[in-house]
Each structure stands twice: as C-alpha cells, then as structure tokens.
Amino acid sequence: MQTETQTQNLVKLDNLLDIDSLKKAEIEIILDHAVSMEEVLNRDIKKVPSLRGKTIVTLFYESSTRTRVSFEQAGKILSADVININNKTSSNNKGESLYNTALTIQAIGADVVIIRHPHSGAPHFISKHIKTSVINAGDGTHAHPTQALLDLYTIKKKVGSIEGKNIVLVGDILYSRVARSHMWGLSKLGANITICGPETLIPNDFIKGLKNISGHPFSNIKITSNIDEGLKNADIVMALRLQLERQQSGHLPSLREYSRELGITEERLKKSNQNVIVMHPGPMNEGIEIESNVAHGVNSIIEEQVTSGVALRMALLNIMCSK
Image 1 (cartoon, rainbow, N blue to C red):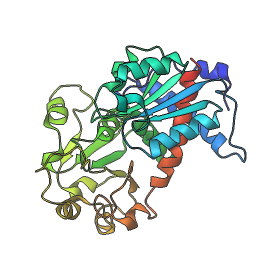
Image 2 (image 1 turned 60 degrees about the horizontal axis):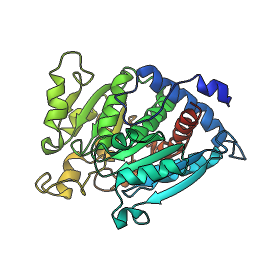
Image 3 (image 1 turned 180 degrees about the horizontal axis):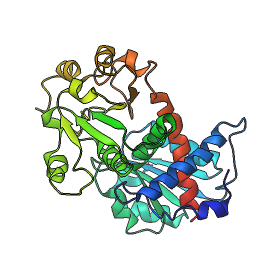
C-alpha cells in the first residue's frame, strides 16, 4: 500500500463535486490508487491506520444504502472517525438551513463531509462556505461522481483500457444524475457511448444541444430509442434505474410497456451480443429495467460494482485527507 508521502504526490483534490471538472489524468490516478485500496480489502485484517485522527461526516438528505454504507466502511477501514447524519435526525427538521449545518460540521473539526441532497448544486454551495473538503454523493439530477468513478474502476478491472469500448446506457437519462456523470467520465477515457431510452426521457438540452457543438465531449454520443439497435456491438450495457420519484406524469405509458420495450432480458442479449457485460448502479427494479436472470447471471458484474465502491471511496478519502 502506498505511503502518505506517495499519496500526497498523487493528486491535489480539495473537493469532488462532479466529473466534468476532473482531468483525464486525475481520473486515472484515482482509479490506480483504488487498486492499492482493494488490496487492503483482500487482507484477513481489513484495517490500516492511514486516516487515524481524521473525521469524516456523511450528511444524507436522501435515502441511500450502497453509497452511505460504502463510504462509512471505507472510512472505518482507513481508521477514520465516521459520523453519520441523516435528514430525520438532523436539526433540519427544526428549520436549520443547509448553510448552518455545514458551518456546524466545520466547527467540530471534520476533515471531509460527504453530502447527498435532493437539490442540484447543494454540494457546490457548501463548498464555497466551508474549508472542510466536500464530496458530492449525489445532488438532484445533476451529478453522482463517485458512482461514475467506481463504475469506471469496475470496467477497467474487467476489460482493461476503456478507450474504444462500446458502452450503452439504457433507461432514464433525463432524471439520472448517474447518467450525466457516466457520460462525462466515459467520454474523458475515450469510450464510444450510446444512450438508449424513451424519447420522453432523453434530455434535449443536455444531449442533443451539446452534440451540435464542435469538439464537445458529447458530440459523438449516439442516441437511440431502439434497444436492439443500441445493444448491437456493445461491450458493456448499463441499465439505469427509473427515477420514478423525480418523474412527472406522462413520461411512460406504463412500467410494463417500458419493460417490454427497453428491459434488459436474456432473450435480447442472445440476439445481440451474448458476451456483453451487464452493469447497474443500483438500486434495481428487477423485472422492469433488468430481468432477474440477467442481473444475477454470468454476464453481470453488479456485485463487483459494490465491492469496487468501497475501494474507490477509500482511495478518494485517502487522497483528500492527505492533501
């Protein structure tokens, strides 16, 4: 495992708010550092003193299992003190503003605050007002940078170089912060991206408008509403969760219709590419976005994504606390 001095030489990262602000080299450094963190996970005793004396706060205003738990596990493996705050137990219920909550976290001496918030831009807002490092764990429909990084790490472990790989994102592109972060990350690492979804769930301003800008990273993204066309020649397919809690009425005729037209099924994979790698950022709506046999089948690396999440988040915490 790398020493603290070596970690300091890796990359200077005060905050992680989105993927588009990261350089390709910075992404690659983070992914490489996750390799040494995963070595710790494979030990009999999963504990190192790297962040002893550091305090990490998770501040979640939305529900989470994978992200919150993996950050907590990552911090504890690195020997940090981890404090969990959720919306139900915070003073937000008494009317405290996000600004004042952030100031409180800074005042207790936290080194890193990890925030998930329903409003896009909330992590950016608090990063401007506190010296504590901020990690965006998902803000509205804007971004989910650590999910993108852990999936890039998972893909890299599975296929090596991401450059030139054909990767298809299927589902709710309009309301998915995961999709936005993935498009930035995959573009920076040279993947060929196809997005596939109902026309009502593909954001015209974000995708189609940017495609017309010469040289923009999204200018080469392919768009289709035909999943069989999208899966053709795909190396990796990632099903995205339908963000039903964010959607307005009228986007979908019915969940049954969506499953029939865009669900990832064994039959579809047999017709297109039987060797395609299947991913899902979770949580899954099995039987709608993805068939259970596919989610838990031989092509799936969904469980590996969860394991990668701990290693990747260990790498981020180690880098940010060692700056």
